[in-house]
Amino acid sequence: MNRNLWLLAILQGLFLTNNVTFIAINGLVGLSLAPFGWMATLPVMGYVVGSALFTGVVARTQARFGRQRGFQLGLAVAIASSLLCAYAATSRNFWLLCASTLLAGYYAANASLYRFASAELAAPAFKEKAVSLVMAGGLIGAIAGPRLAAGTREWAAAPFAGAYLSLAGVALLALVLMAFLRFPPVVARGSQQAGRTVAALLAQPAFLVAALAGALGYGVMNLLMAATPLAMQQCGLPFGDAAFVLQWHVIGMFAPGFFTGHLIQRFGPLRVMAAGAALNLVCIAIALSGVELTQFAVSLFLLGLGWNFLFTGSTTLALTAYAPEEKDRAQAVLNFILFSTLAVSSFASGVLVTTQGWRWLNLGSLLPMALIAAGLGWLALQNARPATAAGG
Image (cartoon, rainbow, N blue to C red):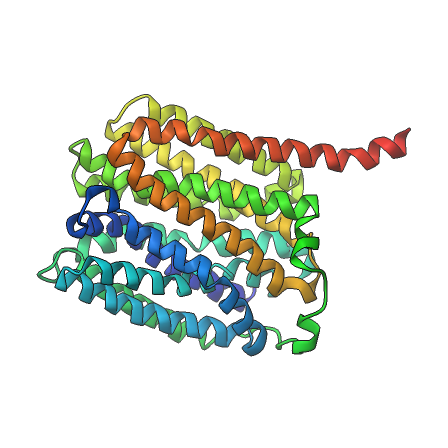
């Protein structure tokens, strides 16, 4: 771990502080402002729709100006969008809140590349551990995000307007730290246009499974996490309990980062991803067993742990499926699929939890988990085929 990786881990934590706070409060602010209850998670959806829409712009910006300037632009957008969210909450303007979170998606599309940048800052033999350890920086968000949401909700007259203002300060701190990072030099623009097309990349089994398993695993996590504050409110549990549950959920997401990279090096990404899928199934089973604080806390913690194994495994699997000159194109495709899936799950979480309830939300999560399991099994067979042929 060199200084650049430590700084990137801290920046990942500050990004997750923004992310977790948004998840914790956007649905509740949306519920208080939305014309209809089923529209409550539209601000959450706006955040991930914006992330999907901006993936191409982010890729082109980083290809032209490099990692550091591209990340700095994302942080500047984070400051502006947080201030707009605070104004929307104060003026009770639901549609401005949705537009502001849509703009905040630019920051999310930018910062989601931290995990790929970590591999570029480490020696080739260390890239799995670099990805895992930088993602472990999300523990900062696990601790700071829920506390920030709970501690600043009454700072201003409008509920949670103070939380949005505090996020502008978090992004400003990240902008200062970004100035101390040193990335590899920008590759010539002509070289960045080389390599395979998007269709050719997606035709590779490893790339396709990495993209779909990462996106669906993240989608299930987001579906349940975004709905949790609303579901707990419907069950009569206070916001403090929801903040506690989200805190342990995010700890489950990022604490394994200290050892997930080692597990991937030892057992391979497919086995680690399979373990993540199994943990998600256990999470759903516990969530279906009851709606007390204990069930929410344990199931969400396991959901975070399963997400870590699936997402870290899919990221490292994807790194094996494209060449350095293809990185901007490949990473843009991965993030577009990811954020498009998150957009659907964010909207579905609000609709399902307010119309069908927590139980059906969890039952609906079984379908994408089955698709992930099928994809992992298919790729394992694809990988075993050459060895079988050689043995014959």
